[in-house]
Length: 295
Image (cartoon, helix red, strand yellow):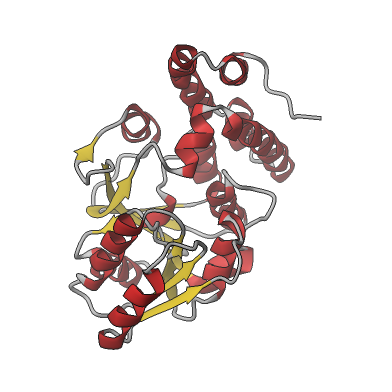
């Protein structure tokens, strides 16, 4: 768990791990912040629960470098990079291990996900309704996906929930987190594995709670439009790479990046209401104008 930010939400995330019905887990928390009382809380916790490990960085590394450090600590066969404001349902570990038992050929597995707000209430924001109803594949039981079909689907609209994914540790460590990215590092990891021939297993069994709230970094970058600069460059570069591989359908999906454009368009009214002229221009330009890389 790469950690930075809200202490009560982090503690809730940790408690959700402790509540797992399957005991085959270890939790490592890499603290990239300076919130008071956190080391003491973990010292007391780990005294009675040796499966919990805690480390505070001497200096702030930032999100991508802290993710990479966290990934480097993984030494089990499988690893999940849990969000410090998300929650596992009690059967998450059991669900993911059962998927890998049934499908040992995959390198990524994602369970069903429900979305919660800052209070923990289950919600269905527009972005998640679009993910589920428009872009995500319809799954009954467990479905295995791979290759160009999977790449094209994700480039059209990234319907995955990165913190919910359980990875084969060897596979994700071979790819790691690219320091050039702060927004699309999750999609970059996933596509890198797909291009390398790895497979994904999707389960329809809901065992993860993904939190959306206005204070998150992704929400802040979305409302001012800055995240879409990075997204545009990434999608166009991926389109070129897919074309080189002969994955023409995936290349077209990357060049269009439909869900990303729709997301930007959906945020323009709020930017207008705030009087954020720069943000409004960035959002509208991304949504409507021909896609061109910066520089």
